[in-house]
Length: 311
Image (tube, rainbow, N blue to C red; front, side):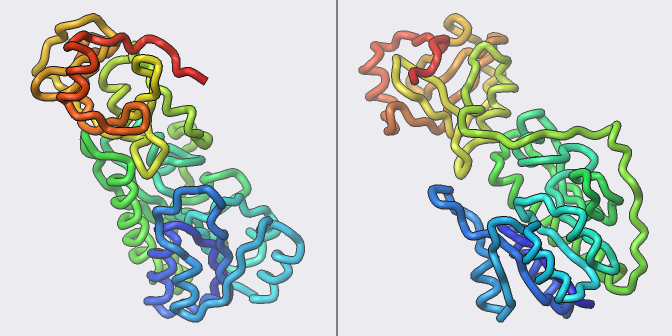
């Protein structure tokens, strides 16, 4: 079976590795150059191609006529897309004789679209996974071939869940590949009315509204924790970044809602529902003050969290 593979990120590396292990003939890999200024914390498809002797390109526009011609010249039986960042047009999807398959980081039809792991955590999901499905022009809407679920624990950060989804993606492809290679795939169409679609996120979407319930704030902090840009707000007119938090149902609020305070054991926020969120890891004005430093700075006073972030 001859394949053309669009791939990027950890899922691209691991799923490409599954194809190579199965003996799939990969005629061409299409990937991305890392974007200048982006925090590159993930594995490199280009490095894998160099190690394995695979032919690769990284065009600005995968749907450009010259790229379509290059793919057509490979005469692919199948096209795979593993976390490639561009939508593939109808001209590309029509080329392979056995169709085009994509790996998506959710349990479709839930969380179609961009950054599905982050959105699942924000919405308090306790489960997500990876879905291998046929590509059609509408995003993440084709027939589902295989799904593997993974749990989202209550204090999991996005990076924790993402690593689980990478494993789920590898397993889903590994399970489905024998039938794909023999043409015995039996996909089923998803009911999109039971699912959801979400767009991309930007760093400014991590602004914390401390008038929200503690669980919602905890979910946001987990969903955008590093290597993502992190949740943030203003504290005493300086930027506060919250990197990890913990719900404290055992504590009763000693101060008003939307306030920040510290005691001898840690620092906390009273959220909009009156519940306590402990800030386990945080930065204020670009550094991490010690508990003793913060208590000296505030004289033990609670600080309001209601003011907006300065521009």
